[in-house]
Length: 381
Image (tube, rainbow, N blue to C red):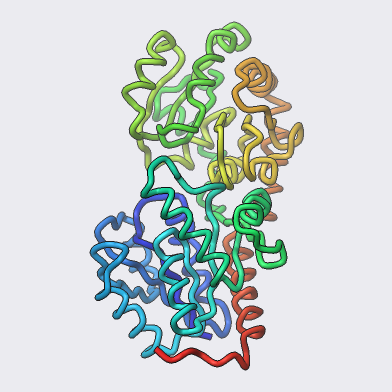
């Protein structure tokens, strides 16, 4: 079975990080001849090096823009010459490419839905969003949703039956986040006091992540948890405005910027905060669980599929700083309770959110789609 997985590029995004991690596991699935395809290399990040080192073959179309006839010719020639059996697309542009390949060549198509909804704040983004929904309706043999919440929302958006959309959770490199044993050393390295209550928020500094709700909670949190510190990990377009917003709380809130040591930071902290207004399947909650760290996160998207409220952390309403303060104070003031929740989080994520399970279930879906398509003739180019 020859499969071509396609995405726009190996940029540093959430979907791309997961793809870079799971692709080597997919390539090792029995009977699967796997190639990773990209539209271009212009936005490549260090994730491209990981793919190269893994030994997985990569095919790049060299597209200069989404509508690029030369890239389309290279794409269709590759499908024909390599006798690809199935295309698995991962993002807006490649959903359109795979949809056209289905229409023109009769190619079986699997699409992955990584988001709850497409950006639609301009005519151009609205048009692209409509093209994705149309491609899904007309060409997808199956859609993989990264959470059950995404699955149900996409069925509403497209009118597809739920039987055509399957939830396959993203996995992570679990061992990479098993860092609680490094807590003392990491705290010493960072200059964090051994017993100071510290919560981290790992998120891009962009709209929708809820930083403003956290800042609103800080005064009450200072009163409820003496000596509390909040560490913000990540960077983005809103950094200047968020720094200004947090300026009155400079004694509590620290912007740490983009970091490459997130696993160790999670292991050194006491709790994770994620007060987002929207998420599909927030990977950082899985990563925190793998680090044995309890979370306080808002009930959006697939959050409640990762965090079991009152057992592995707390799932709270959006935009409610009072509840955020209350639940975070419980974790930071009761170390024994927090440790028990962190241990439960570790057990949950290590049993469900593994790369091995993601790869095996994806390969099984490929096989089922091809079995259903057997006997259906391919169209002429």
